[in-house]
Image 1: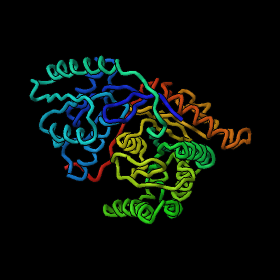
Image 2: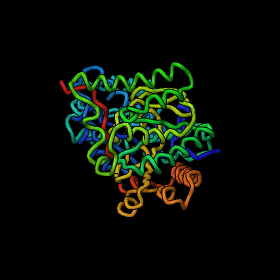
Image 3: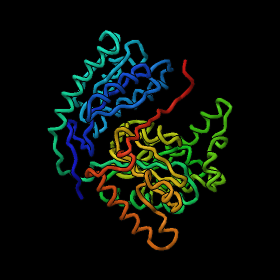
Image 4: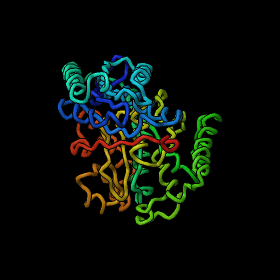
Length: 386
């Protein structure tokens, strides 16, 4: 099985061909927004971090920024920094170069002479990069080069009954073909972690699965909080989910039935094929951001209650098992998995249909989130700003 992608100099293949205008900190985010608005073919995002962070917290931000630049959907990157933030330009550039050798330019606002001059400089860099990117043509490549992230948000009982198991069918199909599927959301393994651990390919993977769950619970207890006080969310409860364990048992269906080959820390580069886990929060934008930073070219996202969530770098396919949500939010939802609940289609049939939609999207079809221009992100935090 093959798909058509944009080959990058680091050997990976993208399914989109963007130029990234990367804000190194919150102080550069408005500037990158203005730059991106002036150059068609570029993408950017609002970085709330990059300064006033303790080292472990800053590392999470650095990993996301470097991972975004290295994501195969990005042709090249223009990094914009203020100049005095913790995430200094040389640190960001070094982190990016450790992950990829793609085109890279940099602009420091304080050194350029202020916002207007920085924008002028960055716009010139971006225009040249977009022109160069336009010369790259899609070429055939093996599906083993594809990494698919899986996410769920705004869950209700139909998520665990229909949408997540259908994504599990997709995951199994991808793994069997040699691709990579990422299962995320560590907080939503709680109560089901023993089930996942049994699927680890070896003892090391099994212990890592248990470790990330217990570490997450301990981290919250250090500040006197309990994960179950915030999860399930009010929307989950209104939709009919009663406990975190119930939610977790639905969540893990996204991982299908194949052995788990590896566990990755937040936003680290995924290098294994097969089914892998990434240690992320349940928070949707920050979990998706981590998988994108890890190299996922596309994300499939299940929702019972409905959500418009997208991402600036990768297409996000929205799936629901709730037929009322699909009818109510058809502008946002790409795939209706509810027929499996009503017996009009089998899980396998819907899994194949979803696989076909994924491959159409991989080969260029826009998702509804892309067509609407949704691009919000978040980055996980260790602690408060300093």
